[in-house]
Length: 520
Image 1: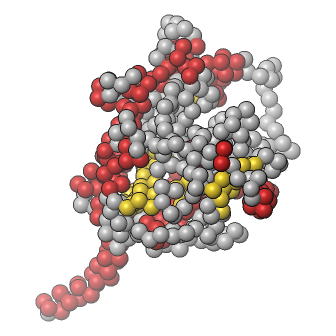
Image 2: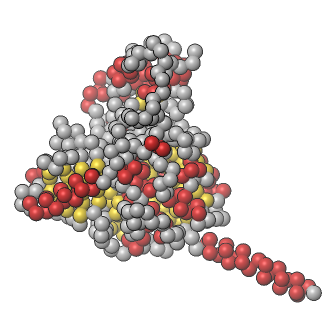
Image 3: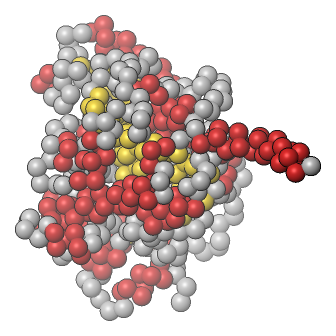
């Protein structure tokens, strides 16, 4: 009887044991996404004054991809591509949520869009997101995007401070709580976005540098240390060997603002000297300095240690199909097939893989700046063409021989047939993108829909917009405490007043918060 009972229990537990063994073969996935961290902001990429020992070690333990591109030189669309495997323009997301309102721009990422967390959650993964969101705030919750646990800024649900200091702590708690099951977690850091809030310890470490270098080096050190906290947690939990870790950045470094020299303390908050590693352009530019960013992969036993891959071209839209492939998940198909990305999992395992699809970018270029004028770009093979919306101005560069897109080496006049082909590709692609936002992703009606009645006697333009625009010196559509104080010449009771404006407690005051009178 005893042996029969043991046999029966063994038979009952066998399926559970098999399920656990199957789960154990699924890798955990940690996606660390920095903010405005330039390709050249790594000491392993040749930087001579910034030190990133934890990231350097990560690269020495895995693959440092030299040709990774995000799909926008600014935050929200870049993150859309990384989450959905689709070009952000397909959702009308072509700029940053909360900054202006083009007709095609929704108020949030469509919750029906495919997302990596939702697909992996359906396959048994526990999913988390800690840090910046910036994919809109409205009706959808983080759970609607497939995320089980979250703490964010610029997003719905539980909050973390915009300084980013809480982000790794929250992510570590998630890792520790889920170490015995497969998990996927986004760790989206604040560094090195403005406003800078470096720690005292890191400032002390770099006190021998000039003030601006000191602040930026301290910020990078803080970010590097936060990456180290995540890596240490994986080791401590005994799961580093079965965890795929990816580090990247949402776009290139912000453009320095020389005129900030006249604002007391502004070097600390509103001056960026991040580096592109010799690439042309910076954040907001479709040249490589704005869209080519670090991409480091560590996957013990699969990704060869210490490898540099300068041949494979990866993009942010490749992340969804590649992460799904690593987890043994087949992404759903849609009207456009299987999305805009490619499954480049073999590249993460050390193989040299050539992508088969062209890459497209859409932006609103700054026509006054020689490095920021392009509205559209397309890359096919080694050729990259940048142009404007009517296709009348172009540059053509071979990125294999002209990584820096040196204007003196523009080959548009030498290869008119390539220019014609790529210009047509770019303009045809743009013609497929929406010009009006999806009404289901709008908080307010668009033109042609019934509008809400305006309160009587309300001025058509809120007068608070005027000082907001004047005080917002870096034009990011948020007021920091430093900007608020500087705009009012450090008058009395400014900090309490600032906190009353900051209704969501994220440490920044948006235009909407500012023009709406705070509670007394």
